[in-house]
Length: 226
Ligand SMILES: Nc1ncnc2c1ncn2[C@@H]1O[C@H](COP(=O)(O)OP(=O)(O)OP(=O)(O)O)[C@@H](O)[C@H]1O
Image (cartoon, rainbow, N blue to C red; front, side):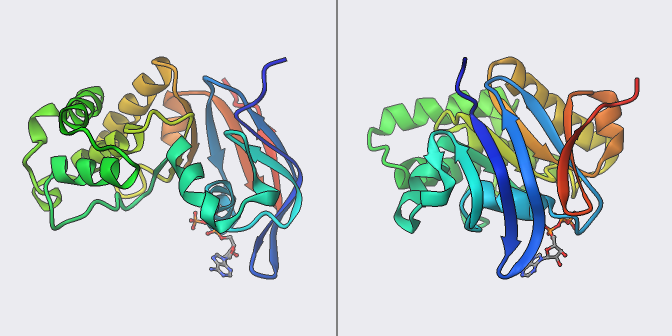
């Protein structure tokens, strides 16, 4: 059987000493697009943070892109993040440099050296999100939707095995949310696996897919009504 990209078995998710989620048993396989939904404060961000190594997994088993979350050491976190693409609600672009420099910065930080290879890669990822003409724009010259596309391009730079998107449309109006969602759908169709936390039910209805729900300190798969 194919090894899942992510699994958690009897995991407990904590914020310091407070238990946020218990009995977490989930699996995500290559190529899936999975939603993580739940009311505010139910633990979606805590769940995502545990997956990218921002919170330690203290109980249960967890494995993500071949990293054992129980054994994850601080010095391994950058290597884990290289195999993940993380997208946040607030884009987190560097405002003191243009789009191209934002992307080159990440490539250099993750070990790329060859200038022409870096330029080619930047062009490729900007193409994937429909932003190839925005190389020299500064983040503050772009709309929220455009900034989020650049953040998605940044997440794609190192060809991640899994993209974790935490409320990627949380700061966007409904029309722009749909545009960003189209980009994520396209990326998924091209083979990228995506886990997306959201409370945007309109998107769920428009783009139905496997859905995990946080509620009452548990995470479980829900079946969407057609
Ligand atoms: N740094 C922290 N220290 C302690 N408790 C925290 C911390 N951050 C969040 N919590 C608590 O953990 C619980 C889950 O919060 P979390 O942010 O994971 O929920 P969420 O579902 O992502 O909510 P939202 O949709 O508002 O982002 C909440 O009760 C919150 O108060």
